[in-house]
Image 1 (cartoon, helix red, strand yellow):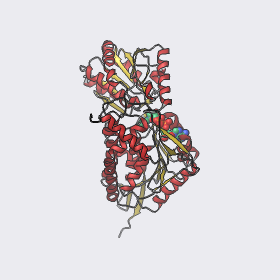
Image 2 (cartoon, helix red, strand yellow):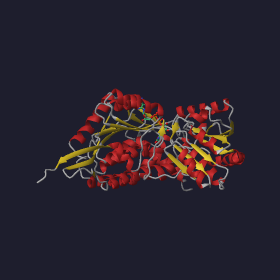
Image 3 (tube, rainbow, N blue to C red):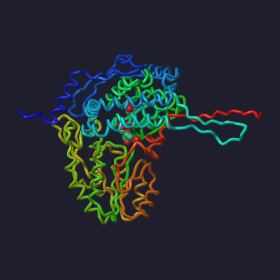
Image 4 (cartoon, protein in one colour):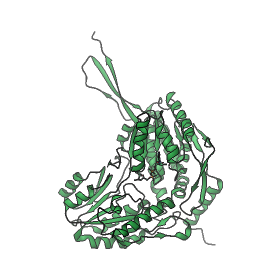
Length: 504
Ligand code: NAD
């Protein structure tokens, strides 16, 4: 008999894990709970449309309970009162627990939201663990300040944890987005209530268990799964939540500001959508690499990335050749079984997202863009959510597919004549998350980078990334910065303590 293939092995693990039962209860104060009113929602896998488990449908009463637990944990200083070195120890143990559970976490992530298992294993779990480790390692190396006052005073400027942090995160990188909030918020001594997306709640619940096993005190890290308009709204409106780290759509980011103004003016840090421009100038001499990166970055995670370079601006002289290269590359991104380690493009998160993406494809066609490849669903016989990688050429920057975030594997190619045209079009967007540019001309690289109104500019690459650099945008892409030491700014308040020094 033939040995089972790696794909078969992952399917067998998935079947075993589902058969063993996945605990979908919320986790508050170190304990698992059903929703107060006993309601559940089905967690459906986009791989095949089947129910993986049922998950507690958190409501305002559950959020109240979680916030009370978080407040109590903060109030008695069981975590905030530990020395930074002691918190570091627990954070490092937490990261190790995540690494030890790598295969389980990767499997849950892929089953829950459809990304290829190779990415869950090689990027999402290690990236999330590194984030937790990095903030743990950082926290006992940050010093406070003494202000340069006169000799009759000592003025201390200290960073204090804000208190109770609400973290509301999306489904496209569930573990990573959660850890980008958890890392700095927990390391700084806060208590956290995490509300994962209703489309991807499983790894968040498991992370909270792993944190407890690592020695995180009960009540410090709580998870309330549920819908946005129920648990999410209750958390962001809560009078005893001091700050909300939100990652999600611009539409809901607006609501966050409204919730803050209607409640206690809690700090809101919004990390929102994008429609990033990737500009290829004719002088760039390695067009094969530029095309491979343009396609790879666009189709990574099925195009469900906030910083996906979804507007490709190509200089006219090279546009035909460049589009041909893209067309030739797309078969590498044919959708396939996410549990096959060979798959690079998996399933979209759910039927609703597939419909949204197909709607944008129809809109592109209706507005006169030329569909070079793709434009259709795929693997429908699986019952899963698959859309072929799609490239539109001759897109104008005014078309809907150039203006709105599609959040699927759809690339819009826009041709431009001059550097000034490219800058104007790149900046003509309500978003300002990332941008890329490809040129061998150093002056142009500097000029254009400076002119682009975005949070991050990529020069002659697109996907370089590291926990050491901030991630966030301008305009309607939000105001928060995840990652890097700057993320501590969101979860700490500056406090000044003046002391008078009497002369002898
Ligand atoms: P979403 O805004 O629909 O949901 C995000 C989270 O908010 C979910 O947990 C959801 O349940 C919750 N929510 C929804 N409605 C709510 C409400 N009325 N009140 C309170 N909470 C509510 O976004 P999504 O579809 O889950 O994620 C995709 C979006 O996230 C895209 O726009 C993407 O660009 C963005 N994103 C941004 C970044 C970044 O760093 N800038 C990173 C990843 C994703």
